Image (cartoon, rainbow, N blue to C red; front, top):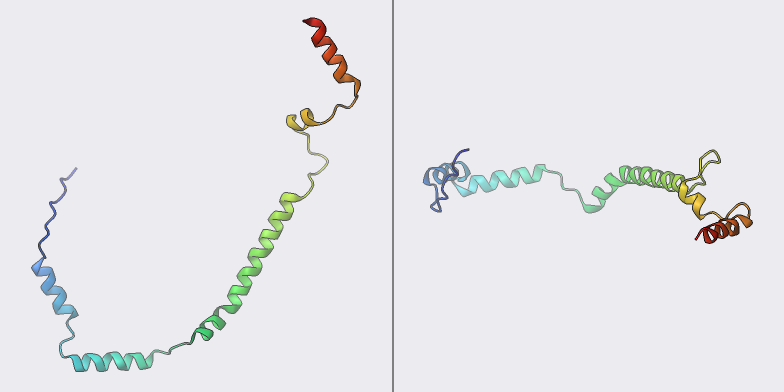
Length: 113
């Protein structure tokens, strides 16, 4: 594994000179004129125009999300089909089919002690 390079807090003069050369607009007047000419070419939209442009896709997305959520909620809350076998917890919690069974089981457990 390579050793990390030591941190140098001093500015890099070569990189600084290269950046100044690229980013310096030179004479300010032609630079400002180019920026203003480009700004006039760009069409500025108002906030209501931007919202109107996004209205149809937004409504379509909301419709898809709400239909999907409704389907999933309806499916989760629907009654299970009759062919599904009950779980062990369902059987243990359910009341006995014959009310006398509990007394017979308790009597046999108490009688064995």
